[in-house]
Image (cartoon, rainbow, N blue to C red; front, side):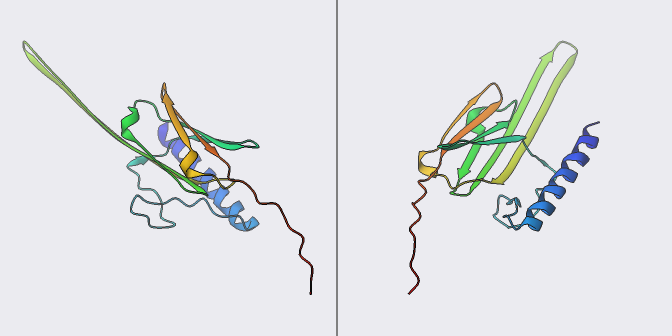
Length: 151
């Protein structure tokens, strides 16, 4: 069942890229941790679902990242881009009479998106509660338009 949803997510992203390229808007191509442009995120990374809301004063991104500790999450904010990554490793071992129980889990998240407006990375703030990461990024001041006379 999970594979079925992965197929839908890949199809959705492919369609989004196609429409963005058609309309001339910047593509939301992801960046690998090494910074290679246009590369597809490796299969071992999970992509968190992200909602982006734009208000008059800020851009707010909310990402679902359950099962992580806040110190495992890394966020990079640029004027026009948001990048979220995380790695988690957990090992549990119980030894009781007659048996040994051992469980290991690990997971990696990675997602990079283009922002709808320019933001101020230095004034951005993030919070993480109950598996939900919220990043508030204030918009940069838009300079007033100045009419220009043709000479």
